Length: 341
Ligand code: AKB
Image (cartoon, rainbow, N blue to C red; front, side, top):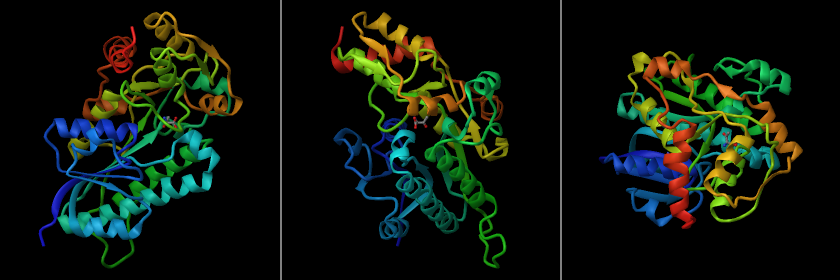
């Protein structure tokens, strides 16, 4: 039986999944197998060859997919984000870790069927870093990949371990077994900062104050930020996030010096984001009412990420700095979306 070749996208209905499907389809890669626990919005589903509603923890479903499809590239985006994961840490671990391992196992099987390593793209996060206090955060500056890998959230722990699992499946899987596969998975991961999309809203993250502030103002809603005005963490506009994912997928293997790369663009304070929002929507009613627990999570994340390795190895550079992200992407598209002045 000839298996149909597809790009597998898990978490396809999430913010990144939707944006990735748009980009893949726009570049002519329409053989997309999308998987999500909820039905996809119709305009996303119609860009896919198959849009399945299902759970990455459903072993029967995964086995069926392996037998029906050839998957030279897997974008494993499904995850429970940092705020949500703190309410149900064990459930988050199940989805974020067991789910990732199940997908890596599929990638190994696919690699041996295809006779070449399957590319496995795994979005990791700034949440893998954990700074113990604000003094350490100020002193750390832009953190490098190997620094401060002591996350304070279940999501951060899960993402860090997901990176380790990926490296294991790529390089050391079944290292003592006689029938050890000769070529492992081609695992590639990006540590994303907070992402801001003009077209979708995040759910369950702790960087959500930035997109929430902008989308609320455009709809004429008041917004109380759950972090202080002075809080800083790195961000990136969604088109850059997707571009970096596709650039890393396309990068020649011999150029890669690590499995895991920081990528980032701008690091405004929450107050600076509010200033930009007020400049665009003069009626915006933004207040700062820190939630101690969520504040603590963002305080443990670095203010900046050092992405020099991605720049050196595969030519990464964001197209949207802070000014361009707001002026050319966020404000015009969000205005259009809500029909706001
Ligand atoms: C979250 O806030 O949990 C995510 C992330 C920073 O990975 N947006």
